[in-house]
Image (tube, rainbow, N blue to C red; front, side):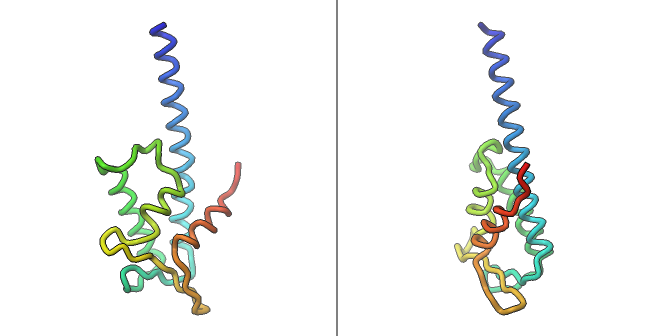
Length: 122
């Protein structure tokens, strides 16, 4: 019985790791899309380049993943990343925005959700 329990726990752990690995790929994809975008990112009223925005979100993600009060890695999804990390300032609560060359301004949350839909399916 102990052997079966150990095997089940191992399989569950491997499954959780595989799920996290896939979600991490999606998050990395989203951050890459930000770095390649042709917009200006607006954070707390200041404008930032796509490269600066992607670095900022990477820092926020790494900080969140190492925080004791953050969800376990196995519970992180790309949508949770968008909601908790990439949508708004954790200090001011103001939404992040992207201003495109045509003058259109969209909330980063909405843009990232649409980019997530473009993530290559297996």
